[in-house]
Image (cartoon, rainbow, N blue to C red; front, top):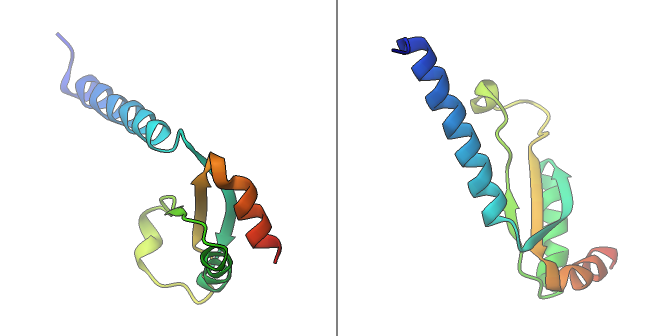
Amino acid sequence: MPTIGWLFVAIVLGGIIIGSLIQRYRYRNLKLIYTAFGQENYFKVISKLNSGGVKYKVRIPMQGLGARERPIVDNTQYDIYVKKEVAHRAGDALRK
């Protein structure tokens, strides 16, 4: 009979594996086109995408337990995805 510690580890690892599979499934038809750091850079990029009529999705990777505190320098990471079919249009919009 497994101990409670091993059972907890098995549940946590199972959750991590299932979570990563769900993330991979959700983003399978999308392509990462830009990673912006900070809100100012993020808003510049999405403004260009909006001007080009390109729909996008944004993912903010987990930043750890201290992410709740507001740092002086905003280094928040924003991963910007578009559908694979419109990646070329997104690239054109970002170059303008």
